[in-house]
Image (cartoon, rainbow, N blue to C red; front, side, top):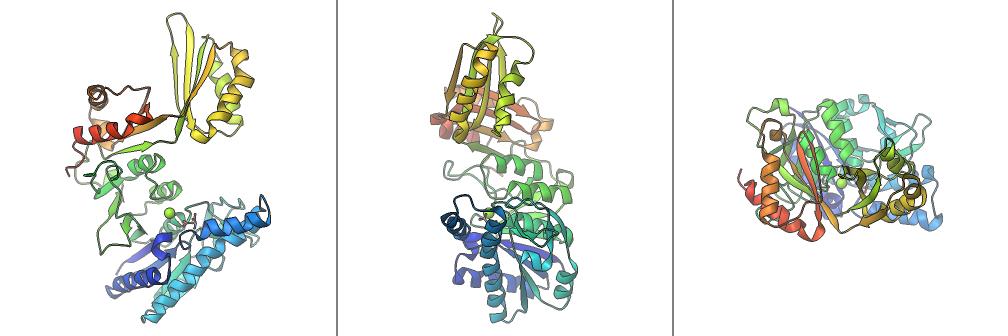
Length: 408
Ligand code: ASP
Ligand code: MG
C-alpha cells in the first residue's frame, strides 16, 4: 500500500460533474489499496472572481483581508470533493489550510510554508478516510489566513507530500504531461515520459506553465516524486519528474524547447568602457524591482561599449525611462533603444553536460533557416537565444526537427 497525494487544478474541479469525475478517480486508487490525500484548487476562474470582488470593494485591498477572501475558493471545492466521495461510498473529510495547520510565514498573498501538522492527517488516513485539503492557503502563527501566491495549490500538494513522506505526488491538470515543446507550434511534439527537476525548472520558468515553479523547487529540495497527468483522459502515465541520479537510462541530449514571447530588450549603446558601468545601468533597474533575464555586453574596437539586457515586455517602457532619466547622461551613452518584438528560445537538456557541439549545431540550424540571433546565453543544461519574434515558430520547428525531438 502506498500513500499518494493527488492534486486537482481548477479545470479539473470546474463544476459538479468534474468533481464527481475526480471522486471516481480517487475511488479507483483507493480500491487499489492506496492511502489518498487530495489537494484541490478553486474552480477555474474563481480566484480571479474573488480578487475582482475584493478590488471592487477597495482599489488595493488590504492583503490580510484579500487572503481571507481568496482562500474561500479552495475551501468550497474541498468540501464539495469530500461530498462527492461520500456519495460514492468513500469516507472522506475536508480541511482548510488553517484546520490542518499548514503554518506559513506572515507574507500575505505570497506566504511560504514553514511546517505542516501531519498528526491529524495521519489519524484520518489510518481510520480509512480520504483526506481532502484546500490548496493555496495556510495560517500564520497568529491565526491569520495566508495564501501562497497564484498557482499555489501545487506547492500545497508538494509540501503535504514531503511532510507525509508520500510515495508520489500526482498533479492533475488539463494537459497530459510535459511536452518536448508546445504542440500548437509543432504538431508532432512528444509527451516526455520523464524529465529531470532541473530541466523542468527551465521549461517551467520559460513558459511551459504547467506547474508553479516554486512547487518544482520544493519537490527537488525534499525529493518528492512528482508526476504531471491529465484529469481529462483515462489513466495515462503522464510525465514523471525525476532526479538525474536516479536515472538508469542515459538521458537524451535535448529534452525540450522552451520559449517566451513576453521578453523585451533594452540596449544602451556607445558609452566609454570604464569600470562600474554595468552596475550604473542595472542598479536603478533593480531598485525599481524590475527583473532582468539575459545580460550581454560588447566592447567594440573603438573602446565603446554596448550593453543589452532583457526584461518582461510590461517593464520595457519603464526600463527605458529609467535609463534615459537616470543613467544615459551619467555614463555618457550615445543612445538607448528598446524592442519588444523579440522572443527567447531555449534548448534544454541535462545531456548537454556531457555532449559538446550542441550550440554549434543549434546555430547552424538557425543559420540554415536564415534566422538572425540577437543574443545568446548558456548554462550547463540550456542554450538560450533571443530572436525576432516573427521567426520564433520557424525556429522552434526547425530545431525540433533537427534534434529529432519527435522520436523517443
Ligand atoms: N486558485 C489559486 C490560483 O488560481 C491557486 C491554484 O489554483 O493553485 O492561483
Ligand atoms: Mg495551476
